[in-house]
Length: 292
Image 1: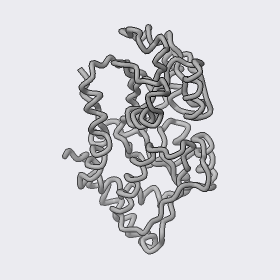
Image 2: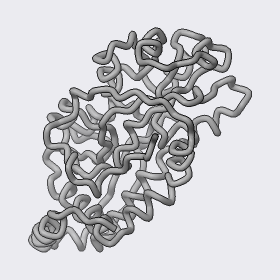
Image 3: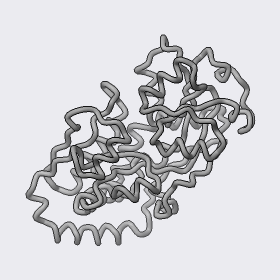
């Protein structure tokens, strides 16, 4: 396992800070995250189990629970900024979100949120179209959540993006033909398709993907620096002892293998919204599938 050069030193500093706030160890940390708007959402399994892993590395007592009702992503960001209902969420970062919230800058899915496969209807012309250039793909309309960072990334790249309130509405717009495709991260598309079933008519566009640099973090309220340090300590301990990578591989190894073994054409997009403090050069925080 490769360890970032600075991790041991930074971990030592964090441990000292944790000792200085040792009163927190005796307390029960109640972590409340936004309940998904999707019923029985399998996508929450990875971040929640990683959160448990990180907290278990710190020795604190904790309780993790969802909010009392579902919260859309845009509202969750606002509620966390206001320190109401929730005290943690995970989402893709951008400059505005890091101004409003406090990120724990360890990418929880090693950048896989930037690898996007195309969800399409099997009767849409795009499904069988031969896509060999980015210009050909630009002729088709993607759908994205109106507040998602992905929306601006795709608009900045020239796409005519159809916007929706959330995942559910995005899916509905795709189904009625208002959009041609719905870019979904490889960390989520397979569980979503499994839930949809073959009868929905939704499929993955064969052999085409989009990729842009991105990081999904745990975020807390700006004033909750102690919780941020606690999470960073736990995550960095997991990176150092290898349990982070083991957790990542347990969830995503098969999906990465499927991606790497496909005859894939992918198009790189620029992400102008990526904050300057993103730890791009810390290679142990990232995974890049090997695509020929």
